[in-house]
Image (cartoon, rainbow, N blue to C red; front, side):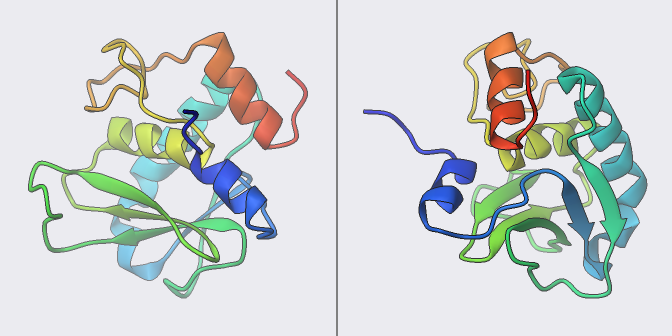
Length: 151
């Protein structure tokens, strides 16, 4: 059985999707802006295209089909979780804690771009943030196709 990615689920639900192109940082996550920009720059480098851009917005509310980053002060159900990317009816929300660093954001941007976890501990999408900055050609092509770029 094939697992549906966040990106595909939104596309199939008919949501107006503008994946990856804009990562909106809400006021609650403003403290993370430098780490988010660094992660977006690194992800764009891995992809070979400028897929992700970052901007501050004046609300933590969703913008149809786009990504919003929100700060979460309390721990997640699993206390070791640093961040969580969630598909909503309006787009994708990335919830982060203070412990989420640039590598953590890089991993979450991968989810926002349509990637699932990898079993390779050297891969950016490994289920635990390891500091890796590596994507396979297949992963790169998937993000580029979902975001309307030509690999």
